[in-house]
Image 1: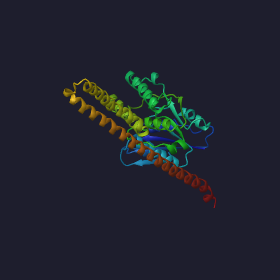
Image 2: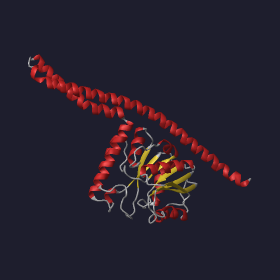
Image 3: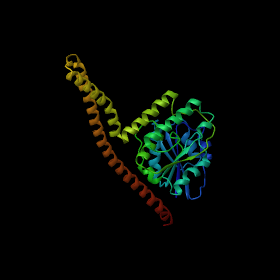
Length: 327
């Protein structure tokens, strides 16, 4: 059983050593623990520090591509290098390395395929009162959209089984944390949460420049993920608004028509017709989007089998390597 711990990095030369030194070297039930960093276009000595400290794999981006792209690139690299379990943590040592054993345990016991660390948000000193409320609100929205019970959706400290990693596919460019929960919830990938600890803040968050920007990007990410996985429901609800208003105005016009007073209400008939047409066209968009979503599921299945083939090839190569050395 191989565990690969991946760490997204962007100019983390000052904090990476602290994070790496905190990682576990042994976990019961795990045969091999390896480390991988995703160098997201760093301009400092992040890679040099990683190499010096014995990081096994480095995924390099020549320019900064964002957390979501880095996460997926790291996931693919972990799979190609034979990971049975993948843990994602941060380079700023926000999460305690000792808790890695806690989040992989449900996977080792076969109880879950995705485990998300639940931070003590209300007791985290460097979180402002506003940020705490927004974290709770955002997690509540994600729970509603994904039909899951994950209490800390923005947490980046999480573990994935090989099967879950093969299934995941992040399409937004902001962050993987919210979309992966929505996807896992909608596709019924076994998912759970465990309490974890956090360390003190070493540097400010780089994920957002302002609280307003964080809220805006998070809500757009959640909405986009919902539209991606439930387009027919979304566009049906959206189309019902103009369609319903059109029906009301149409009935109103008919009432005046039967009363013989329709002459002064032609504008209502025109508006009703326009609203009904808008609602109908929105329904059509929903049907087309649902068809596209079905095709996307086929492509995701193809991607799943391609990743699985990569993993199998990596496993075979890993098993053959000792034989080559012996011969």
